[in-house]
Length: 247
Image: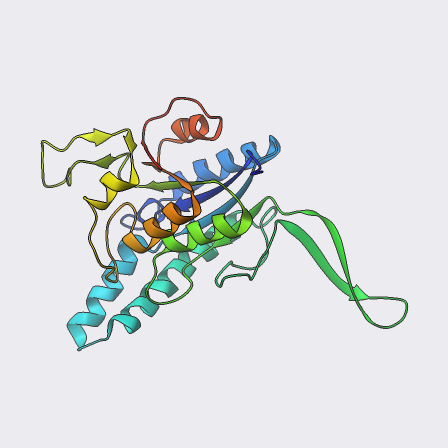
């Protein structure tokens, strides 16, 4: 049975670094997450690359005929820079390493290496980390995919996708003034809206590869705006919230 106080947060890179690092948001986010930790919550936070990722990938393409795999690696390291920043601001409660490859961590358990009285390596468990920070893993997949794969591996049933859009809309609200927010969305209807293929830097609430995994693993996805932390609290506590529930 899933632990109702464990969540994966898929944090959009645009929330961390929209046009320069959003220090005020990160201060509020840090305070909020640490308060929830005090209430017994645990989080795996997987952060994307955001605008800086797409800028680097665009530059690579303009300079030469660069393969998608190489552009993906550029993007992955952008996510790792953002993840390192998050790891730094949560350094007193977070796992010391980045979750940058599958199975690098298998639980929230703390482990400490030492030498036993017999001279052999000894592993001692001494409690849990409250936060694990994740980044991109490998070419061909987004941080959305990493977040959902981690949720499946950790048996966490909900991934909260926090980014710039506060809902999934019927169309792109930046281009269509008639776009309407969707509060609940089935997988069947979601497939009618999504691009059929993954491309580096794809700017969409949930990429198709990640969506297929979430559907297969029966993981609920909640899409909500990153900056409204009162709304995030409602999501965590199972109250009515602003956003899209995808399942």
